[in-house]
Length: 293
Ligand code: BQF
Image 1 (cartoon, protein in one colour):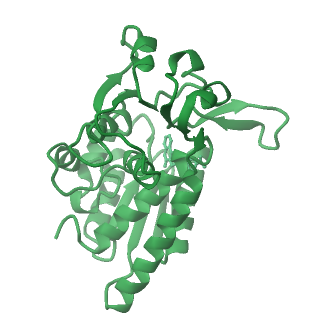
Image 2 (cartoon, protein in one colour):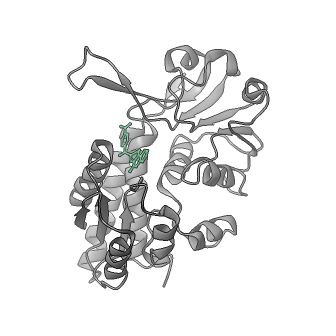
């Protein structure tokens, strides 16, 4: 069993990006500038945005964090997006999800200018992903393909089971793994809450990508000997013995499954750090106008 060290690969990616920024700026390019909109005070969202801003500093980007109370109206938020869409210094921006219930997420996502949509959530960018056109690949699926590539994991012709059909992870991941690309070319099965006999599908899988949001959902009895497991789950589980009062666990029973795996990602330190690094990469692509001229 080899552990896939997402923290290490994310650091490598960030070092590469930092070097590229230096070169780009010394050649007269503008300093890449990411903006983030944070609505409300959900602690997890605050932490995620915080690490995005911190990573911008580390790679030599400018960043702008725009915080709004949970009571902001949809119209006011749409106005803020309009401001960012028209600010020529902002190369890309994100709206940290989830948003408060009174705001229609779809409406917000559709208001992001596609050329600045470094999360890759806009329908235009999702459509471009499906059609193999240049696009911002959403950060978690992009990060996972980077891990497969950097560990040189054989994927061609393999059976890949994606568990979870979210618009952010499961759905785009299933599309990426089915593509005619070196670190894809899988036969993909997208499993979800209505799947019959999930265990049989998993036992047939060479690669399992778990994105369900339920701690310890994938257990050893569901895993074929030698399988690759990518654990996308970030679940808080109460643990009074820890200073924070909780620990992070994935969607996979790591202890049980790891002995059967050829490769497995840990939580924390697996897919999570790659999500951040991929967002940063997309922002560099935006600043260099490599996706939209
Ligand atoms: C790690 C996210 C659910 C909903 C909205 C490193 C992150 C997480 C874990 C991180 C996530 C999850 C992010 C680790 C960003 C991933 O060491 O394991 C980094 O910051 N993430 C987000 O922005 O919004 C979410 C999960």
